Image (cartoon, rainbow, N blue to C red; front, side, top):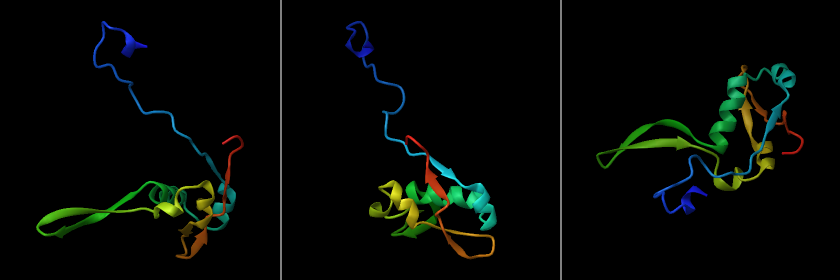
Length: 105
């Protein structure tokens, strides 16, 4: 409404547009049984569906940043969570099947 007011100029919304959200409820009891640290679960979701900074390297005299994330076809849908594995405290890769979508999301 403010953008339509002729007395105001260069009005823009503050914040981001509404986007779909997906909530994940983790079975923390099962995670503990499988010896999965909470930080490992959070980190794998964040890096696979977002990104994670790894390090820098030099190419042609310029410093380039390295980020890791799941390839686009593997991070588009909620069911893609089923393809993730998390390393437990014993060094074993455990499938990320301890999450379930929250009702209504």
